[in-house]
Picture 1 (cartoon, rainbow, N blue to C red):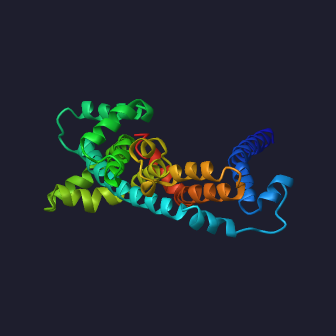
Picture 2 (cartoon, one colour; picture 1 turned 120 degrees about the vertical axis):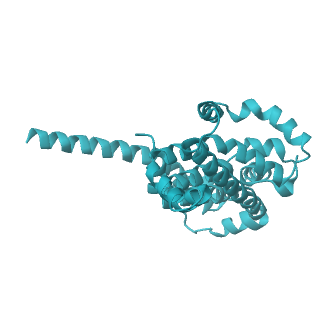
Picture 3 (cartoon, helix red, strand yellow; picture 1 turned 45 degrees about the horizontal axis):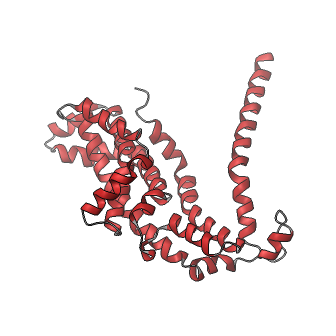
Amino acid sequence: MSSTLRRLATSAATHAVLIAFAAVALVPLYFVFLVAVKSNVETTLSPLALPQHWQFGNFKDALVGAHMSQFLWNSVLVTVPALALVLSTSSLAGYALARLAVPLPRVVSLAFIAGLAVPSISIAVPLYYTVRSMGLLDTRGGLILAESAQALPIAVFIMRAAFRDLPGELRDAALVDGGGELTSFLRVMLPLARSAVVAVSVLTFLTVWNDYLIPLILINNNDLRTLPLGLTYLQGKYVTNYALVAAGTLLTALPSIAIYAVLQRQFLRGVVQGSIR
């Protein structure tokens, strides 16, 4: 009986902690939503109360009147190519480091791992001059390359661990059956590492979509601003229009929340894949 009570107490404590963490994350989002669907007068008079008149038109005003639609489109045009570039290169690099006779594989792996320890702010100045020397300053191409380079180390780390965790006999069987190394990679190993691919996709999307520093360094043209930069512009221009700023904040955060919510299980499975061997 005591053992059952102990398990129930442990479960209740665990759920209480999880609920507390969820509240910390969701309550601010709820208040931002309240501000976004109320008029500025209602927000000033009763910031915590439900709106008397729901103002969903604030989202349209943020998209059209405040040009958030342009910033949203810019983020899509940067995030999607960066995601494709990171997925393709990290998959190939992870497979090579895990399964092929790469020269100095441990040194190469440590170089990628070292990239995880380098904060973006520490490479801001050399990144600016490097991109400028390539003639890609204030262009989407330069921003895509920079964002991809930032997201690549963790992606290679995850994919390498995933491919190492898979049975090597599957690759050998594909090679014996006459398939080349590329066939083994595309048709056998990569589909089995689907969870890792999802994890890399989610991490890369969140990194690129929400990044503020690199676009701030490389982009000066207002027509090329991504959503984080556009949100700063919105806050500066409409500093007293709380509803518009809150609507823009939700529009910026919503894609990240939706993608993580949909792919949460596969994301967690992919992150831990290969961690226990």
